[in-house]
Image (cartoon, rainbow over all chains, first blue to last red; front, side, top):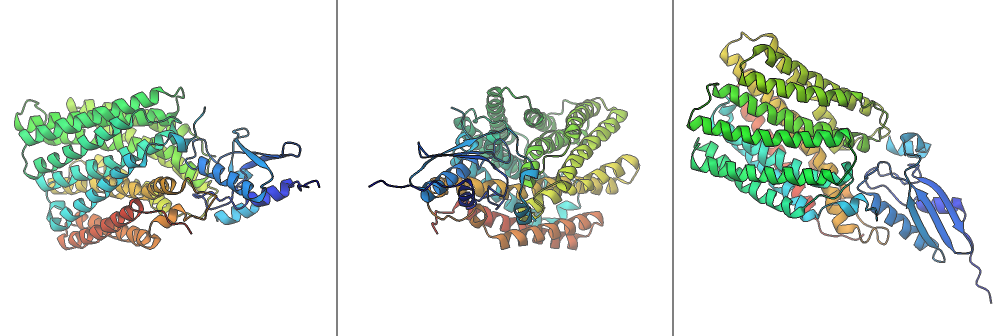
Length: 105
Length: 425
């Protein structure tokens, strides 16, 4: 019998990552506009996330990445994940979603 | 491998004692003021006030600035602190030195105990300076923040050296300049060269980061860096050579620097994406706004130099109090909540984040205490300011009692944070 693993969509992954909160700003990393790209590789069962931080040297960068990794591990156990921090384009407040802006007000 | 800021951060056991010693020092300072309110209407060159001031500037302000810098170096310069061992030496020598120095001032003894204190403090600051220079050497970046921080540490070193020379001069007079002029030199290079310049360097990075505001033009910061240092050099030389015009130019240059820095912070503030400010940030922004008070006092003093000695003395006291308590201490108290809870939270929870539900950094202290502390601090501050202005001892007494309560509340929250033990929800 073949074990069928359903492939998560980008939207599903984004929704999962909404549970990762920046502990200083108290807003999730998706609404802060920190997620740049998501790739799901079906053959290698790998989820690759390209994300940024609101500033270089952000002291909470590690824990945010760790939290995101743990969330993906728990939600998609059949997949491994790789979170890469990128600095291009550099983050600015225009990346924040409307929902995020409301949470910051 | 490129380490992240969290991995570059020093061991929390090095950073946290600075905050505990700092918190205890501000409680002691406010206790001294509460028991001796009359020192705030006497001439500022009196033993009790000198002891309290040095406990404030070294025990509270410098102690926390040093601890916070160890933590912020990876954030600002993107490198690891050169040596934690050197950090421990600085902490130990500085703590012992401060105790001896306060005793020396309290007894107005500028002999053995003063030299002992000076030796410990100069050693501590020298080690701190070398540690920061070696840390800065690891990075190729030549940012404005780096220049501000390194120059500030240079002025700190000169301040303690000037303090030693001043102390020697009090017991064996060898410089012909008056003690009060030398005191002006010592205090101004300390306040503007070390504290205000450090605030400019660290603040120019932290305010945009905490307020999510990266639109402000950095040109005012460049102007601030040049004018504050030019002002300090011209001012110091003018005091040494008694050049009145030089002193006036120096005051104008420093005012230009402060106004430019305030302009940068104002632009950052109005363009912020984070509209809702927490109490720590409110306190920090308010402290920058309070910079206007000493600026007005400096301008008044400059424009009306022929007042009575009593008026000039109370203006000088007010000016020092507004700068050290209204601006610098308030800012340090505000930024404590933006650093200390995160240090402890990372130490306690970094290995379980995402695996288990954890409290948030803001859950490590009491927000109620924090709000009440801000309120009592501001009320106490204004009572004392009005009391000094009108030489009303009763108002000063009430102000110092309220200020003592504010200091205790601050210390309670510091202790609450550093003694926090892991709670998994």
